Length: 87
Image (cartoon, rainbow, N blue to C red; front, top):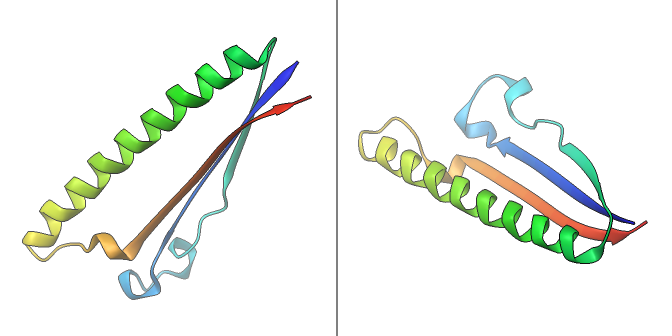
């Protein structure tokens, strides 16, 4: 049995907001079990690709907002980690 562990978090720079509650959100942790390593690794690969695509879209949208002076991509930090671990 294999477990896919997925951790996602993001934080906002204090310079971007006066609301301290927005500065750091608690990470989300998800576990999913797989019957074999191959299926776990396939899911890991698909999830990582999806996260990269989502990050690129977010970055692009923030760049668009930056051009009109409404946002700065440097103010947001997104982090993720995806691992397949033997159970």
